[in-house]
Length: 377
Image 1 (spheres, one colour):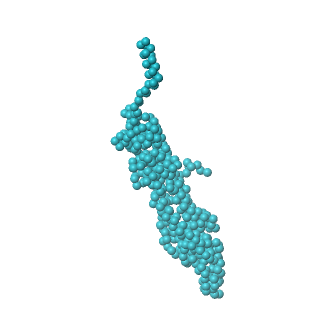
Image 2 (cartoon, one colour):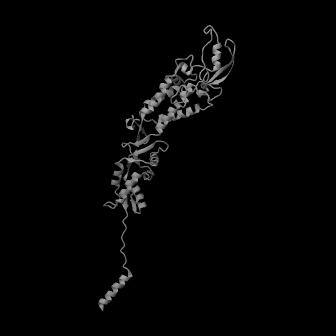
Image 3 (cartoon, helix red, strand yellow):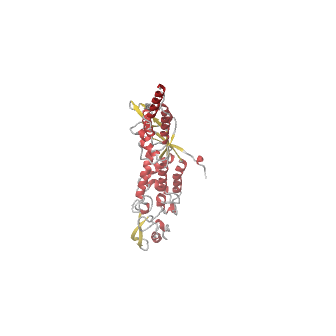
């Protein structure tokens, strides 16, 4: 088993609307290999292996490029509903495989494709490859002329078709044609039951008798998951800015930042009697902060990207002295230390309490009086 350090990791980045750049690492080698394996298996299956009697040179891969995720409706060779997303899907898969830069458009496309495939893959959907419609011969003349048919789905080479072609005698085939039936799992008399090779490649679960690898739909879902499981780090060059209304309250939910503010509150007033906001701000801004647990959601809220599924694990922060003063005022209040903001929290002043001299107890006064009386006597 290879160590993680030996895996090829590619840096991905996304730039938010406010200019903040977030970076992540993805195992792009494995990410690309998923699609490459699918392509290679699909390219290697053609002709009689997938039940093509006439179009023997068309592989499953070529069918996909022409057709996409939807099956054709009628006929017995080659896809009929062209441009159902096949060309576009093919180009996007190639782009995703080679891309080193995270793209929210790519993720959006993957999610849309996944939903589209979910819809096409429903048992009763006519665009499900399991529901490719054919007319299965049920009665024919001695020379093979078909008299009646019934619907069959998935593949046309049924046992009835085999028998019909064997009886179809003409000058080209004086002894009939030898077109053996395919696996009975590839066709069915009702929708949503057949598992022909094209269905196995697009929607299967890897247990097919021809396409034994991950299906395209599984590859798409893995690609989405690989994006959703990324862990982002905010770039030092574009730190999170704690400046909008309410941002400092949210920042206080990040332990490492609150710990720094608390440290400088406990340090007490500087020589001017104020909070040392410059030292506090410098410490906050000079280091990378680790984000744990629900703090990731707090950071997303500050960045105004609450809907993304990825976690944010490390951040750099830019904060003004005024915002640091507000945070220190809140921390001090919880500690029972009185502070007040001056000029809209440009300065945070520690309130010094004046000491009131203790009044001498009555018995001490009485004692002093008695001594005076004694001395006078």
